[in-house]
Image 1 (tube, rainbow, N blue to C red):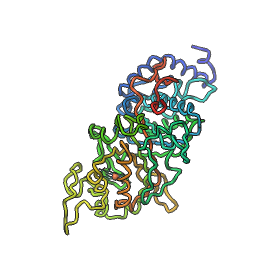
Image 2: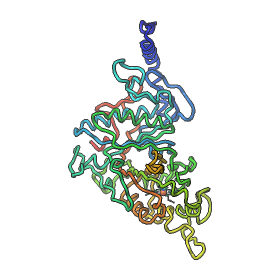
Image 3: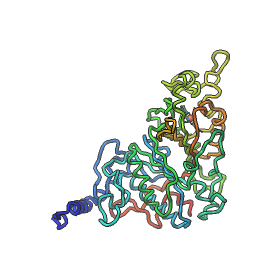
Image 4: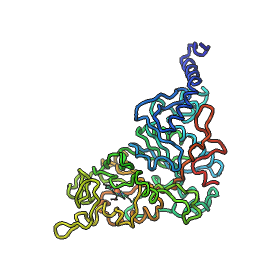
Length: 454
Ligand SMILES: C=CC1=C(C)c2cc3[nH]c(cc4nc(cc5[nH]c(cc1n2)c(C)c5CCC(=O)O)C(CCC(=O)O)=C4C)c(C)c3C=C
Ligand SMILES: [Fe+2]
């Protein structure tokens, strides 16, 4: 036994024990990273806590790949999303931030601590390199997805901030003002966005907190949103969840199994028209809208009216033209006085591809509840997230139509908004692996969004 392990000071004793376990656990950690990359469950491992196999909730998704994770990944139950303002004006600092973020995201998504020491080991007189709240938790299917806002490229006066203006995609437009928008600038936009999704909210918060910590001196948080109860399925294997209006949401969503449709409507293709956006090949555009729902008014609305506004039944989620949940709506079917069964101002009619030039989107929204207002009404709603190949064709026209004609709008208020270019994934097998088997990025190794800076 070492001197420290025999010390009367319990902290000294604990530290000595941890360091020892760190040494003993070094070999296992490499195995943990490999197992995790293969998509198998591991407990959160640190240099101090070697990995152990746990239950199914411990699942991991690979961080690297052609596309970033967290888009077609089966939607997890929880969301923590943060937008950042970049505070440095040095391009090298921005690149260094993205390198740090890549390393941390590659680690935490595989159930590792944010840094190699972990929260309870490492130099005793320095802050731990991981904040610790996820130490004993499984990875919970965590994915971390990064995006770039228009303001990263040009400032409000159109000035080139980081020598990136000639790479600003035409598709990364300033979203227009939509009818009935009531946007709070403090809940909108941002230079960078990080979407963390997991089946455990603490795991998602841990990821954002440690990324935010690593941004110190380079970027600060502009807004965040916690979400619960996914409002969309992104895989046919998932059951359809419900939104806070009590309706099934995500029935007609794009699903990962529809590969041709996902290629057409989600991923930015190679050889697109815009030469400024070649770095986006394999990426997508993330549209975020914080939509407050007038819950109390809705709850005083008759079931007949609720179903008419949505265009589907509340229980089964079937279109009002008949059938079951997954029956396609038939907009030609009429009832008494030749009135269409799926009303002209119903949400599903106005959002249907047949009314929108065949456009589909991959929705990945979450419910939110952020306390209440002075009148005791819940500040609750749907944090709408959609991934699309081009917001000019796949979001703006539909949102204009919905804002203008959708009967649901009487119960909705858009209070936050953001549009972000989500670059492709970090290529598989490209991250440098450290001597302890954990992912590292160095000055020369790949990082998320690297093609933008090439
Ligand atoms: C601009 C895009 C959309 C916004 C904003 C939006 C907000 C929103 N939606 C619901 C509830 C439902 N939406 C449903 C379907 C649906 N919604 C959109 C787009 C937006 N929704 C699309 C493209 C679709 C699919 C249309 C289709 O292909 O049939 C449904 C029905 C079930 C389903 O298919 O998902 C519900 C219910 C709320 C409450 C809301 C804002 C708070
Ligand atoms: Fe919708």
